[in-house]
Image (cartoon, rainbow, N blue to C red; front, top):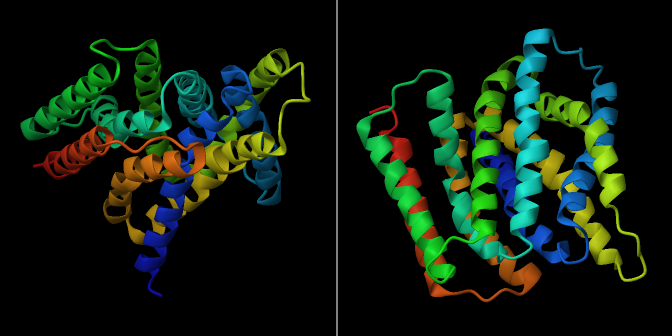
Length: 288
């Protein structure tokens, strides 16, 4: 197996890991408080991150790096987990998969803004078209109006996109998994308190499968998925491996059927396909 092929496979593992986040959240959001799911997954992931950081004897980041880590943490440990969990309280996971299809484009937008890039006019046009598609889909699904859960999903996309844009450059200094791990460590004291406050008071109705879903969100979605993703990018090349992310909406939709038992409708597949096409086109036009 070539290094490039290994990178593609690792990247695919990372995308699959992230694609299952919404279905597993949807599966337990009616059992646990959404805020407990968000905070609990971070606390559990922090335990694994601390063991790993100790094992590799990771150096403490400097002040400049800590500033960026705080920005990363704001999205991947607060914004996305909390708002995506809240959204899954009332929206199907497949619906969320369509909205999150804009994530690669949103990351590119904030990367351009933060680092003063000048993408082409064609790129900005595709961004507008992609946004219109997602809003149109949400309106159709919501009976002509945006639901509060749609707003929560959009906030999740914006917050994690900023984190990804900043984390992408910081990962060149520390390595992707170190960036994520330190973000978890710096967030955990606050989120530990939140998890305790929002923890379930009655445990008798909580099944082992519910706890296993939460453990998946913590160890895989919140932490281990980044190991596969960043390693895949390093081995196979960012430009090539990042294209695999275009599969994420479809994997999420399929997982929502298999894990949560949601109905697969033509409208969702159609809009997911259109969003993916626009995002792929936008990537090609970004620097043209």
